Image (cartoon, rainbow, N blue to C red; front, side, top):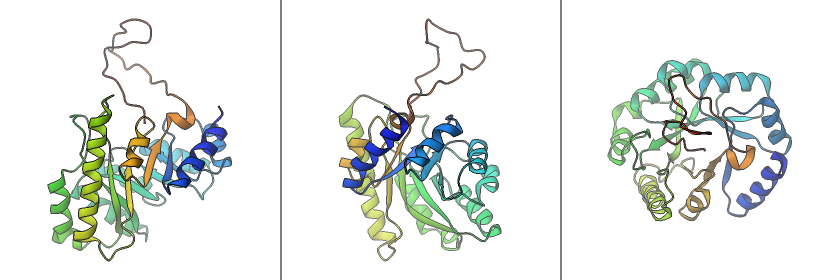
Length: 245
């Protein structure tokens, strides 16, 4: 099916359960994003700052750009003027820099705290205790140019649906607890971003309000083989599997 058909079908499915769709457009050409835009999609997620900036400059300005990949503090300044949400806040240091750059641009930037829920060393995120410590800190209380909208998590890249379900369940339970403890009177704390193309149905069953989907919309991605990586046969390398968002 076409990108247009994929967007239309997904929106119909997700609107029924009041779940927001983020179209993950990393590595995809402008023409693909424009087709998704023309089909009604307005929220796009990018992993790399430079790629997001380049696409922002070429596409309609009513697009909401979400940074969903690991973000280095020295790159916040490049997206602070326009980014709609940073989903991957994984340290107080990063949050302080976002606040600083948002203030320079006279903005309040929406953020999600990324929580580490996967059984994988390659994932980023705060531990449950670190989230609580951050929200209780005096430093956090002084931040006026960031707004915490919720939590984000990435499940383990596995075929074990029971494990994925348990990881999403734990994050949803934690989200409810954080809401009651820190944001009971804040209606803006309303986003639980979990679920990608491979596991979004499980995520929605476990309480997700936002899903990040790329291959289901745009098709698979072809990643270049880094120098020094040996091919082990047609289409195979000695690299670990890369989970496609």
